[in-house]
Image 1 (tube, rainbow, N blue to C red):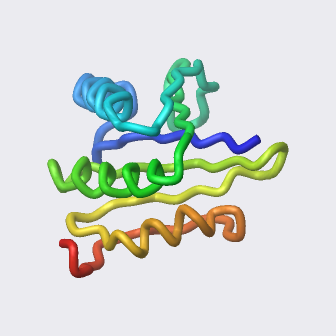
Image 2 (tube, helix red, strand yellow; image 1 turned 90 degrees about the horizontal axis):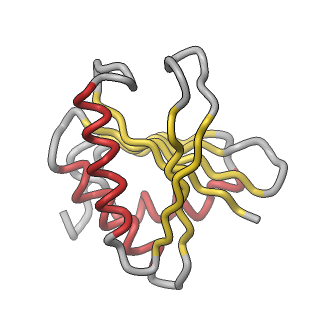
Image 3 (cartoon, helix red, strand yellow; image 1 turned 60 degrees about the horizontal axis):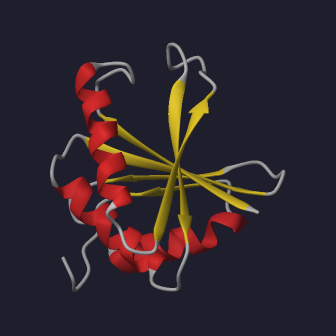
Length: 135
């Protein structure tokens, strides 16, 4: 089973900062509105970078077009504020999670789609600004 966890961040702010908590609530609402994307909240374990217990936003891409919908969503969501970034953790069964960090203003659709599809083959991938015909 594939598990996909999405985390929204604001540069320079701690995960428990009120602006980041508001951002996570916005992210949750926006993800729930996506057609073909199932969203589940799960209590996540805290780590050295975060205080307390955080809620993981787990998504399921339930249709053929849901990956495309998520990629388009990520481009628009990140474009609302240059300080935003998304971290996507993909875990296949009991394997080590693959991490994709997405940041920038003009994310190339093809690059992001390819990175998400290839996540099972790479340890970590950074997707930064890159233009494509859709930008």
